[in-house]
Length: 484
Ligand code: UDP
Image 1 (cartoon, rainbow, N blue to C red):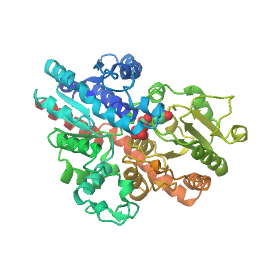
Image 2: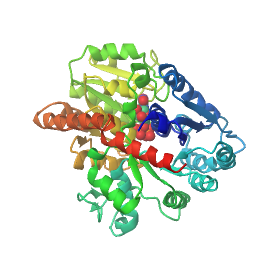
Image 3: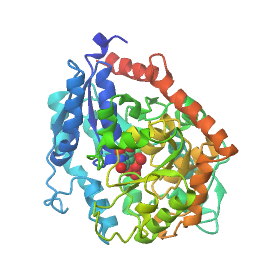
Image 4: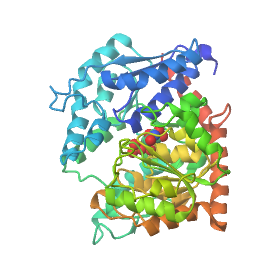
């Protein structure tokens, strides 16, 4: 496609306000704009601050490409939320006993933006809008003005297929307990799961009702954009297009649209470590020898669990970078860290307290394994970097992604996480130690590494000119352009 054709497309992106949703949408907006479209990201005042810097940097690097932000009003206090609560991160960082209720309230309160959304679409008339799945009201609003709405779930084809088959066949209703394993019916690959891991919202709960709305809005939408590539999960991409949503385009891995060091380091929050310091540390290690451990943007472990992790990392004897969502209280007594840990692991281990420049780290040749909670962004970033993984799913759709990594792709080993994290089962130091060793050392590790490396190469080929994701994005843009 020539940029002349796509230049005429104006795509509006509306991410849910959480880092795990905003990061891939920003990547997507940059990708569209680098292919000649005009991209506008819609968000709230405080979230716009997160996006401004990377957008400005992108514009400076690519003069002539069009990308911008449009701010919608989000009066959190009037909506019954705490002041300044415009992002899920606010809820995760101020964890209170009612965090679950607050998350739901936050989710439902986004409907407040419907009015602004409608007048924006009416006056701007974009070529299409890409709105997060969590905005079910967006389809109707767009349709009113003849603008196609695309859905972005931010997960894999595999997990979308798993949830579809769970909903269709309801196998979790036919087992004795929530921890009884069963095969997901009708899905290729004999995927074994438990009711608890599948985490299907009960239809009668507020969340269940909300998810029904999400599905209904999706069924009348223009289609679905997926942050994946065909070669990774072709069986499930085909299944999805055949049985779930006929109109789906795979355009990922989106993280690969970041090529410069600053771009890779500047995703989400400000990193808690200087990127040069981080790279220097990695440069001093032999290729494939470092394990990177991080659990996404929202996980907060108990001190007890953190102590087990620390002991497991130390016991493994491997080099590591460990991202811990704790404030930087260096010098003070940190109850979550065994005494003398940092002195003993000096040179071998690096703790990042807060936010890590994840993609920059994953792409470094010294990194040989990734301990992840299996949030899809992290999973596909690890895949794109060609890394084997230790899987530690906790909730959401992470157990599905975990099955993809361990059972289908065979590039992951499970740490021993079989229950939702909220149930409080502790993963022991022995389990952490074993899984970390397993992913770096030994014959099986070597085979896993080879498989992961091939996937990384396939991922890069998919987004290059002529690759499957490159072509699918072209197809999509041509189709949108053709509607005008
Ligand atoms: N991330 C990061 N630094 C961190 C933690 C997370 O850059 O310290 C990024 C990570 O690269 C990914 C996103 O935040 O793009 C997290 O998304 P994911 O789907 O993995 O997990 P979630 O936070 O949604 O559970």
